[in-house]
Image (cartoon, rainbow, N blue to C red):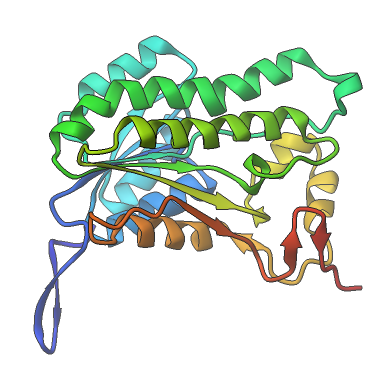
Length: 261
């Protein structure tokens, strides 16, 4: 992990995150892992949370971070995680996922419940648990990794779009409730992002997951979203990036994607 300053020809440069502690959830893969790595490079003291502690520990050792087990759907796990983190300046609520592509007429209610629990209720659990520390920091940040699915509905996406709409309105409500307090509330909403697990978990097969991105010349990757997250978190603290929507150039809208060949 970088120190608090980089040396350049003009002298030491203090890194934007120096002295600040950032918690990143869902950090064992994808956007969460990329965000953790980027924030560590920006000088943040990073605390990683996820269920897969083996992967989490490997990442933590590589980037100089701290790994703690966390299942946002388990109140006891959230309580234990919060108790283990003394200082929190930044919370990146990244844990989430999509688990089916069924139309409403064929809805799997267990999948709906799982989707809502991890994306919405889990986010509420951890935000509630860490909010006292974020307030006490004097310059706290709560960043939600939302989705363009939280802004637009589409066929076969009801369980996920409903959950991500919930995340977006959660963030908007929290911002209203915290106005006047030293805590920013930020939403970064990615469009099409190719990661190793998201579409695989959603479709259940590698072939179907690959088809999502077939012909798309340059879908976003996790590092692109991490770059946006880091940018929002390193603005002067009076600057609140309410909502940052980021898509690949090939995606003009949820249903409008240019595919080659």
